[in-house]
Length: 395
Image (cartoon, rainbow, N blue to C red; front, side, top):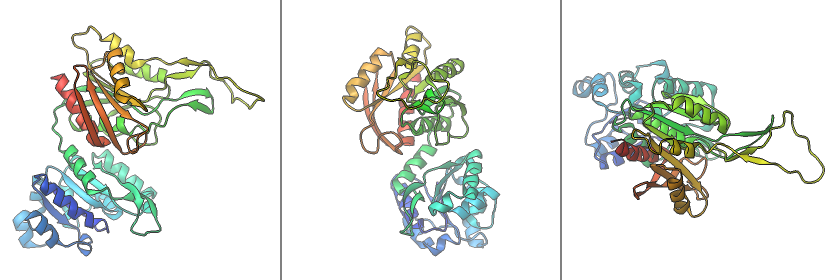
């Protein structure tokens, strides 16, 4: 792997990224922008990696030893940490005025892993938002940024570079084998909304992050991904076919339209179990005294799929999710059996750092043969571990 270090205060974390990657057995080379060398030295990375770092595009000795094109040919993944606002802008524009940008220009963006790091105002600026959008569309992956305290202690918000262990997890995911190449898969994500009237609805706090991580991981492993997603503020991953829906009924219809040929169906969406018996055509006004809302059941999409494929020899691998607040495994096992699933992913959504909206997850995966596995880490890392189990069942 090639570690490209940008010029920001978070560059000190890149030393730990290099150390952890070396500890994990990676073959590592490092390139630094001129600005990066104001924060960390090439000698530090030489001590950590056992190789001289590339620092000067016009250094004849460095170009002879490992020229920037040779570095581009060699790298399986190019990690940019920190990816500063300036560096993101130059990568979007295709600049090649230092050893980092010249090398990255010769690397397919699908092999880039960017770890943004900047002040929260810079991260939220229209220019940076546009640069990130374009880089994603070209195939670049991002890890982070995290939300937290900035170098300017009076500032807090999104823009802080992810911690080194999380970046190393993302590197491992980027190097995942393409063991699902050509396999059609269907993933659902996010919440559904059931209208009470034109301005109110029943829903839940699902952010869609887990489902989007599953779609991203499947894409990176070569699968042909159809993603059916409810309303989310988080953008879905690039490179997948995304169908947007709102209600449970719309999700049912979208799944029916996309199901043909799918080898695996992973139902990570938090589908509403009930909807109002009748949605009011106009905004409902306040009334004196108590008000009663009559609810009816929405389609049980997962149970319907389990029944549909109960006796099928070529049934897809069916994966359900169980978001529980008590007796997590007991309730998940009941759901696994009742709905005729192959796997179920259960988690305690009331626990810290594992509930709705979190960037990490801690789950138990149960299978129909009695198997059990505990998984934890970033949602992308958990997603890859889930696909490992789906892949084994496909075989």
